[in-house]
Length: 253
Image 1 (cartoon, rainbow, N blue to C red):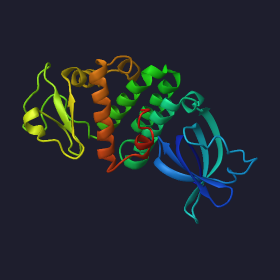
Image 2: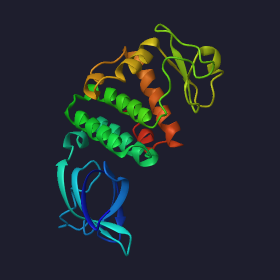
Image 3: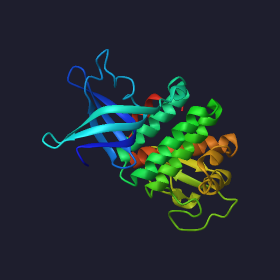
C-alpha cells in the first residue's frame, strides 16, 4: 500500500478507540480484511460518524502511517447504506450472520468474497422479507464453496456411494460432509439433520445460477427448513464455534 490510497469496502465491525475515535474493520476487494481508524467518528459532529458503521459500503480514502503501521480513514463515499436491511429485524440478523462469518473465517479470494457479500446485501435490501431466508441459504452455500468447504451433494462423504436424484443424505453436526443413513451413525450431541433429495438437488442446481435466480426458488417448506438448519450448523462448524449472530437471532433467522 502507498501512503495515500483508496479502495472499495464494506464495514464489518466497529470498536471504540480512545474517547471519540472508531476502529473500523473492512472487507476490501483489493486488500482483503483489514482495520483502520476513523478519528473523531464517535464525536457528535464527526463527519465519518454514520458512514463508518457496519453495513456501510462504498469507496474509502485512506492514509497509511508507516511509522505507526496504522491506517487512517480520511474520507468515505458511501454508496450503500442498506437502510432496508437495518430497518428489518429478520434481514438485519441475516446480514449479521454474513458479516460475522467473514470476520471469523475469511482467508480466500478477496474480490470474490467482496462481490458475494455486496451482491447478497443488495439483493437482501430489495427483496421481500419472505425471500430473505433463501438469500441466507444461498450466501452460506456459496461462501462455503469459495472456501472449499461445501459438502458434496452427490455422494456420501463416508462410503462415497453416489446418492442418485431421488435419495437424500444426512448432515451430522460437527462432521464435515453429507452422509448416507448407514454412515451417519447414531445422533451425536448436535444430532442429525436429514436432507431430502429435493433439498440436495436444489443446492446442486442453484450452484450454477446467478445469485438472484438461485434465491428466487426453493424446495418445499420442510426440506428448506432442514437445509437452512444444516447450513447454519455448517457455518458454525467452519467458524470453529458458535456464531453470536445465530445465537441471538434464534427464532428469527
